[in-house]
Length: 436
Image (cartoon, rainbow, N blue to C red):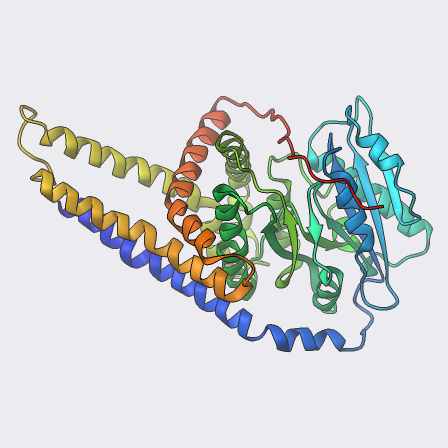
């Protein structure tokens, strides 16, 4: 039983210890939130953006894009700034063009992409938006250092203080990009609640830790970058990678840009409440992560990335794959031990009796369940916008959610080996139309 117990003890010590470190960073962030909000009143210093462009990539988003655009147009930055919204209609063949045509607002620009340029991935759509914003800004005599380009997905809703918080962080001229907190708005079902626990509590704390280390990663929703920083990456700052946001963050770090994270503002998005679609989404993310492992040699060779930051980046890129192979090894060990417990299959291996097996299973169950319960408590204390019962359900479902992630990782490895890159777009859930 020594080997399995050793792994069990690791789960009950190393993993919870890592989670406790994240909880500590999250608690410190919550304790200083008021002080940072008061700093929002500091007078502009000439580095913060004067123009905020919010890019909404849209491919067959008729169910949600009306509300998203209306919410984006309603966002306001600090006094003296302006907000503009650019929707990239990436060859939609549903009612998306009609929904967009019905929105009459001087701050809205619609960029329609048709065949053969359309439907080449979100990265290409964002690159087209970047080039359009760059050309408009330069033609208007704007300083690219004072133009911010944000991304809010077709189902996204930004918090009212979103642009104010981005502006606050971009007062530092070394900051080239800002990532904000991500929330899930359809939390009425367990899968949605688990994803909000993942994004709003766990990923939030992880990003706070990375912010302290100088290794913040960009997400697909709620990322903001200086136009000048994007221009330094050429005509196509976003890549063809399946997780274009992860690669953009890596390219910016390699270029010496500083990326900050804030938990004081957020973007809400739809969670996936269908297991099959959720696994498909996480498989795409995992495959994109695998593709970005190609950046490891460049990260190691870079003189702009400090040693502690390098280690954190390498861990972030490699941990999913180490976890996948480590889990396969442990499962193989378990399967062999169970096989040897069956009469006629030789002497017991590691586990010597069925009662002992029950003790080991209970031991592991505690180790897998405890972190989710801790994060549910953090979510409840810090955010106070979800019931304790819903969070308890999410915490108990969290271990199974992690198993789905491992399944997605192995599917991603299979797809990458077989060189399958094509992906169908995730269908949105229907929402109420935007208010007039």
